[in-house]
Image (tube, rainbow, N blue to C red):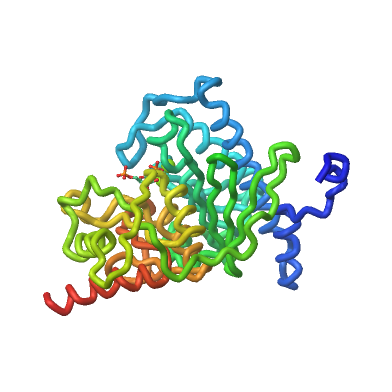
Length: 341
Ligand SMILES: O=P(O)(O)OC[C@H]1O[C@](O)(COP(=O)(O)O)[C@@H](O)[C@@H]1O
Ligand SMILES: [Mg+2]
Ligand SMILES: [Mg+2]
């Protein structure tokens, strides 16, 4: 297509148009979710721009602080957190915010309150910032009945109660993947337009995949089912080909690849981290929500991930998520171990 024709393409499905279309399906909707989402999108664009120029704008390196998890914060962790906290509060549609970078939940001033609670990991995959490897933002959204009566229990809810979830990946392109409980759609930022355009409508994860994704450096501490599963991936006994290993170390990027290509992403518990590493509210739940909406599964080693009821905002959980059949296999290994116990 030539540029003149391209310039006339004003029929593109932007993320705002997409969400407005969804809104028309709910007669009771007053546009609050659309406004909230437009603020999340703004935050993503801002962070994307900061990530792109991180090396030039002296945004790589440590901020000099540690967060509640005891992890050293990078400058981009701190900046991204500030960006999303401000964007979410200024939307006028939020009442509680839970961020990986803040020890306590933020209760929005009553004058600025709306009915949505947003849980988020402002910058996921921080260890990959300084070498320019894909990183992202993850978010999940709950809704309260009464914005004047909010307590921490409004976010200590199982993931199945989320209204929407998504992530934005700052990679070779900037991609926002979103589900509001009616399938999964992917949007790519067109830098010349400054708009996210629907490029991956109705994403469905392949039923079975050829890739497994796990930090094998932890193998000596794994439990029996995880060790058996990975052994089967490498040396299948049914005559099938071994699976390939891909591990980036940014959950957003590893899950994005799993969603599009199929396969399984594992961050199991191990002897050193008996509750796993990934955080329930803003890593495990949003990604599990997206996986289920795309036809896959998410399992903690003991239950469906979205059924878990968190008791603390920064709680961790083991997680196995991806293609339906691959997750089914790890579930049966855990079930077999339980029978033998
Ligand atoms: O380095 P490990 O132990 O394999 O952990 C990788 C995991 O840790 C994380 O980086 C944690 O996220 P943060 O960067 O938000 O702390 C995930 O993105 C990733 O899946
Ligand atoms: Mg993270
Ligand atoms: Mg993070």
